[in-house]
Image 1 (cartoon, rainbow, N blue to C red):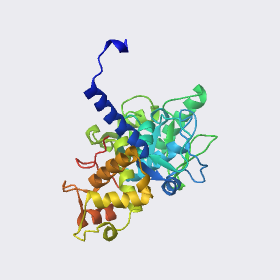
Image 2: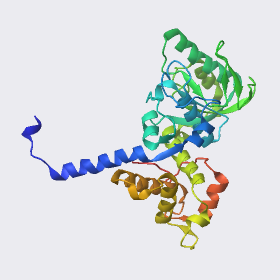
Image 3: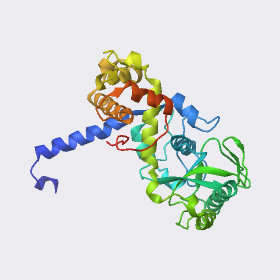
Image 4: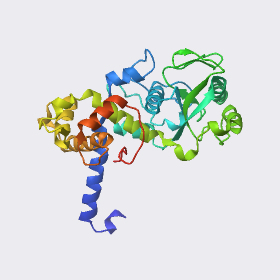
Length: 310
C-alpha cells in the first residue's frame, strides 16, 4: 500500500522535474499551420487526423511520409499504418514535439532504396488489399502527398506528382521491416530476394522518428528572423540567449505571461535548435554553420550533434 512507504523528498523532486520536461514537450512547437498545409495531402481538411491508419489513408500519416521523404531526399516515402499510433484528430494549427513522439513512438529504422515503379505499386496494392479483406491491417502502406493511389484497383498511379513509370527506378524511403527480409509484404520480399546491391546494408538505416525530429527542427529556422537580426551582439555568432529571444518572439509573443512549463519548453527547444546547426559543438551557431543550413535546408544527415532527446 502507498501508505506503507516513507515519503522520499529527493525522489519526489526528481519525478517532478522529469514530468515538467514531459509536459514541456506539449509546448515545443514543431510545425505550424503554414508548414502543415505544405506537407499534408492536397486539399486536406483540417484538423488533420491520424485515425484509422490501418484501414484507410490518413492526412497525418501522409504529412509524416512527406516530411520523411523531404528529410531523406527520396522520391517517395512510405510508412505502415501500425506505426502511426496516436489516433488523434486535433491537428488544427500546430504539431508539437510531444505529438511527433505520440504518432511515431518506435524508431522505425528506415533505408532509402532504389526500386522499380512496378514493385512500389504492387507493394502498396498488396498491403491495401489485405486491409480491405481483413478490415484492418497493421501493414497498410501510406505514401507522401505527391503519390496517388487508384481507389478501385489500389495501384499507385502517380509518384512525385507524375504518372508512375513501372520500369523507372525510384528512390523510396521505407522501414526495413516492411519487406526487406521480413516476409510481411510479398512483392517487397520477392524484390529484395533478387535486388542484391540495390539494398544498402541495414547499418545505414536511419530511425524515422529521429530524422523527423531533426527535419522539423531545421525547418523551424526558416520562421526565425535573419542571422543579422538574431545576432544582436554583432560578433558573427548566434548564442543560445539570442536564439531564445528570436524563438520566443516568433512562437510565444507576450512572453511576460509564460508559465514555468512554457519557459522550460523554450529552453529545451532552443537547445535543440542550436544543436542541429552547431557542427563545432560550441553551443552557438556561426555564420558558416548558418549558411550551410541555408544551402542544405531540411535535408537530414544524422550525426552526433543532430540528436533530439527529451
